[in-house]
Each structure stands twice: as structure tokens, then as C-alpha cells.
Length: 435
Ligand code: PMP
Image 1 (cartoon, rainbow, N blue to C red):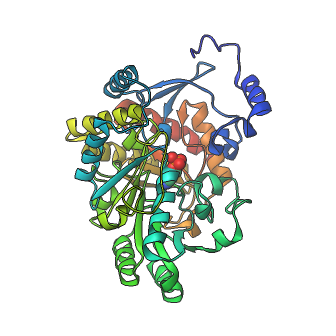
Image 2: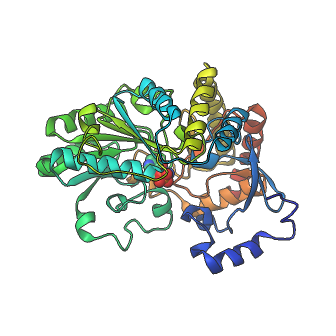
Image 3: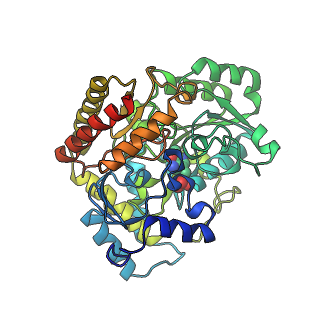
């Protein structure tokens, strides 16, 4: 819908109407902007690094659709591919040639992706990964990390990050106790803690699921040796290692975190970038595990919209664009470094205790004077100050993720101008929150 048609429909009107029909007025909790004390941002359209709301306000967007917008919003190549796919039939629910091409492109770049299944959402991919691990090991328990988010399946809603952490609901009502009890929680970057869990429960643990670069408590990099240690521990105890790369896959490197850190998990989940902005996810990994999936094996998983042809077209176009830009990841790294340095300088000038953590094009401003290594650190950041900073940036036309526990995303569309404008806005915003 165009901004013009909605010019009289203010955000307040819209929110009131939406709340009458939809819980909280939004279709995913973080869109409510409650953690920053604002009404939902109601979007009209987005292109490149810019997003326009229905009131005609223009923002430099650092949410990037929560991850997929590696090239910015609406890149021409992906839009054209989608338009063509739409014209060829919206959905078949049957096999089609392009899905195989996409699977080949994934297998060729993701370490350990001997088999690949395409699904729709990240939640489905992680849920299936755990079911597969349980079936293969005959064990029930899983290990996840505090602050790690793997979608909203029951097993994962225990010490989950981002949305759940934002709302202070680490454990959702409605999750059966038996399911929650099967989820053991460790601290990210604390290998000794994971080892202790294995020493006590080793024979019960089907899988360790981890965001190898965490995005869901804000951006937290793995420390040297941590992922290698998880690989070694899981192998020793016969548990399946799952890298949840829904967020960091194809973002922290061409082959994702497994490629960047040289650690090959047993299973990898992908989402976001792999679908080029359309709903598509993937589960990939060791042939002997993946061959257990129906119809080859007995572990059930299915989907009406799995490998949806329009999403497959978008994903293929995305990967083609990435390959057509050989310096892409270096460019993003260089721009990310400039953005980080600019933000750190601005915080220092204002005398604000803030740390910018970044891996490639994932980044977060944490309001704390300690490095954030895991949830024990992240949970102590100054949430009220983040909310004020968010609003000060928002007023200056810069849109950050509306939660202290969500990673921001740099895209190829964020050029020098957008970086400079963001740093300038931060200069004012940090001063404002310093008071
Ligand atoms: N895993 C990770 C690491 C995620 O960041 C997310 C979503 N942000 C998910 C899983 C769930 O994906 P979806 O929202 O598509 O179900």
C-alpha cells in the first residue's frame, strides 16, 4: 500500500485497530517495540538501506528484515527472479528443477552439507534437527545456551534470547514441564560448563544446539576454541552437534560460521539469507543422519510450502548475486569496521559506557563496560539506557532493532553515506543518554 493512501491513518489509529483483532497488534512480538517504549513502526515500503513508514518518515534501516537483507531491501535481481517465478505458478507442492539447483548451491558452500532439505521457517529447521538427533541417538535431552534463540518450538523456549528475553519471559507458559526438563542450559563461551553438563548427563544428551555466532542476545562472537571444544565434546559423548545458522549463515562468511571458524557440525540449519527475503529455510548435514528423514527413513517431516518455488527463486537469485560480487564479504567487513570505530568513538566522546560487538556484518551496541561473552553478561546491560538510545536514534532517522538483545545487520546497501549518517546520529544520541 502506498504511503499516500494511508496518509491519514496514523500509527496510533492503526495500532488501536490492529490491537482489536491481533494480540498486541503485531504478528511477532518484537515488532511491538515495547522494549523501547514506542508504538509499532508501521512500514509502507523499503528499498536499499532505507525504510519508509506509513507516516512518510524515512529511516536508515539496520533491522534488515531481521537478517535476510544482506544486499539491502528489494535488490533488483531478486525482485526480477521472484516476479518471473510468480508468473510461472505460485505453488505446486511438487518437485521442481530449481530446488535442486538451490540445494546444490547450499551443499557446495556449507561444510558438512552432504544432504539438504528445504523447509519454510527457521523454527521448522531447528525443530527437525532436534527430532533427527533424538531419533539417531535414542536420547532425549538437548543442550542449548542461555540467551540462544532457535525458534519457538517447545524445546527451545527455555532461557531463550531476543524476543523472549526482551519481555522477561524466558520460559513460556504452555511448554510442558517434561519438555522443558529435557532442555539443559549452558553458558555460551563457557566450555568447562558444557563439559560439566556432559559429565553429569552425557548418556542422555542427544544434541547440542548453538548459534555459532550469537545474534539473539545481541552479537556475541565465539571465543577461540569454543566451537572446536563443542565439536570435540559432542563427538566424545556421541551427541549430535547442531549449528543454528539461521541468522549467521551466508552472513559471517560465504559458507557461514562453519566455514569461517573451520568447525564442521553434524547438522546445520539455515534461514533468512538462504531465502533471499522470502520464507525458506534449510536443514543440512551428515548423510547418515539426514537419510533418516522421511521418505528415505522413518523420521517424519513435511510441508505444504516446503521448497516453495517463489522462495526458491529468491534464494537462488540471492546466492547468484553473492557469487557475482566476489569482494562482498570483504566490503562488508571494511564497512562494518568503520561503523564500529565510528560508534565507539561517539560513545567515548559522550562518556557513555557502551561496547560495540561485531562479527562481519552483525553488530550490537551493548550498554555495559564489560565485554559480553554470554547471557550472564548480556542480561546485565542497561536496558533503560538502550531504550533511550534507540529513541534518540529513531528521532534522528536511524532505525535500530528495537531490543537490546537483537543483532543489527549491515547490508551492501549501507554505503559510506549511511554509515556516516548513523555515526553522526549516534554522536547526538550518546550525548543525550549520557545525561
Ligand atoms: N534460529 C535463529 C538463530 C534465529 O535467529 C531465528 C529467528 N530469528 C530462528 C532460529 C527462528 O526462525 P523463524 O523465525 O524463521 O522461525
